Amino acid sequence: EDQVTQSPEALRLQEGESSSLNCSYTVSGLRGLFWYRQDPGKGPEFLFTLYSAGEEKEKERLKATLTKKESFLHITAPKPEDSATYLCAVLRGGSSNTGKLIFGQGTTLQVKP
Amino acid sequence: GAVVSQHPSRVICKSGTSVKIECRSLDFQATTMFWYRQFPKKSLMLMATSNEGSKATYEQGVEKDKFLINHASLTLSTLTVTSAHPEDSSFYICSARDPRRAYEQYFGPGTRLTVT
Image 1 (cartoon, rainbow over the protein chains, first blue to last red):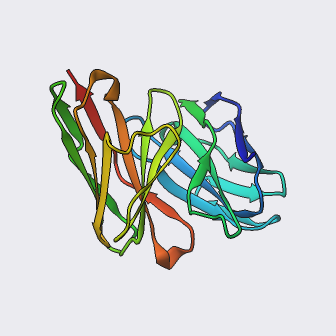
Image 2 (tube, rainbow over the protein chains, first blue to last red; image 1 turned 90 degrees about the vertical axis):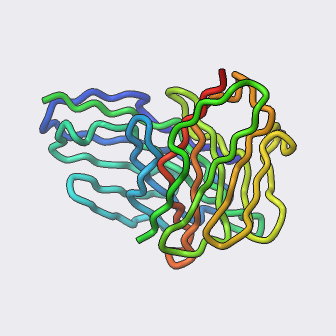
């Protein structure tokens, strides 16, 4: 069964304290792995798509990496405005692909000044 | 690019009435849109996949007669909650696939539904 697990569930950091969020997945033929940021009361905001193991993408203080079993979202020198819930999702490949994403439960990040 | 809007952002209705939520892709044509529901401090739960010009595909456990989905054009999908009850109160979010960007989905800002 396809599954996405994110850890930790919640993370508190001091401003400037770098850390990583984990997304472990089991899926039948990965078509893509997606990272989103969600602020309270808003829809998820697209961050990255990763398609194959070894791929890396960066955006400001965020860097996403992908292996065959998991993805990491590295946050370098975070600022309070990085506080949000970060969601990971996978898209299964193959003929049964309907385009629907399988989401993890999210990691809620709080960055204190 | 890849902007998705939803309307209304908030709605309060009385039990037994119906509510329609609109989802629009503003700068691209979306043959496929998705409707999600999110409970407080929980992740997104996919309700249905909406395909332009055809019937929506509902996830297991989602009542298709209660949550009516129409995808009449390449830029508009609607979700109608019929005979709403307090337990239907939730945060509803739509997303759309941008065919220019492979499999990426872009989400609307969400609609907060409160049924009294």
